[in-house]
Image (tube, rainbow, N blue to C red; front, side, top):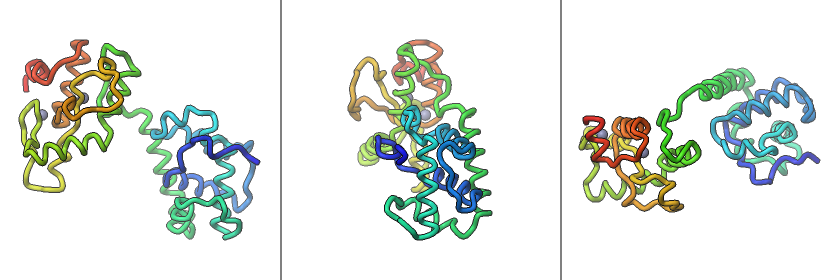
Length: 238
Ligand SMILES: [Zn+2]
Ligand SMILES: [Zn+2]
């Protein structure tokens, strides 16, 4: 029995399952083992996916045995036999693409191209290395991108009608309700390393427009010291 799932590996996403289905169609119903070159190639591709960054460092993550197991699952959905391990995503992907290998192939090609492109793409906040070093910097940027945190910050500002960038004081564009908040990002006022905090308080956050946020981080990287929003405003001249 292949050692594949459990072990805290994240569930297969729709994109990953589409790639597996694409291979499944290529295999014409014969599922090879994890030692097959095509299975290994898919495993390698999945380990390069831009999400699951931490999980993909674990050896068991999407390893060839895991991929072979997923192909078996897809065969089970396709044939309706032995559905014990089949996931909701397996079923949903099969429902959507099971009757169209061509559609699956073209979407799989796009996904593969996307994975390759994302490797050369810069992170949202480019080149920033605070004095704390790379790991802390990445942790910091990731924390700032947490959707829940941003949502909490936005809702507190929404209620107090303070939906404006704290650096350039530009208010949210009011014309389109659905778009107005897309303007904003959450910025940590203090570097994570200095607080060591696991929980972020709203009072440690500033609401910035995407442009000012980028400028401020760039200024911090150039000055090699943490800047307040007011200092950033002066340095960036906004
Ligand atoms: Zn701004
Ligand atoms: Zn920031």
